[in-house]
Structures are given as C-alpha cells and as structure tokens.
Image 1: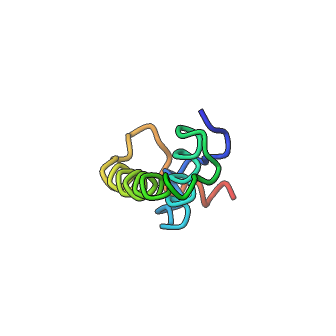
Image 2: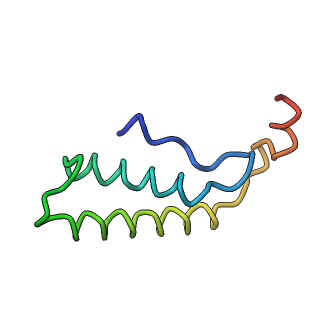
Length: 79
C-alpha cells in the first residue's frame, strides 16, 4: 500500500496522536491521489483524515496482545 505509513501497534507502548494523524494523512493522500487537495476538495480530504485517525485509534485500543507476541518488557530487554 504505502511504505511511508509505519506500524503503530508496537510493544513499546501507545502510538501518539501525532503518529496516528501522520499515518491517516498518508493513507488519505494515497487513496485520493492528492498530496494537497484543491480548495474545493479540502473539506472532504480533511474530514477523511480525521475519521481515519479516529478509526485507527479505536482499532489500536481494541486490539489485544496475543500469547505469541512479546510484551513491552521483552522489547526493552532486547534494546
């Protein structure tokens, strides 16, 4: 899809609002084909970025860690 969108569900902790907003912006840019929308389309573009950001936050908060995934302590121990 878009290589510049980074994974936000990491064992180190919670994604920041800025990280989620940046990923949402990159996603909407990719889907829409606009780097910066025209004035005529900016309201729809901005609304999509906001909604994708909200959906991303809900997803990240709802996902549960599985048994096979290392927890935050394991990732800190490797560092």
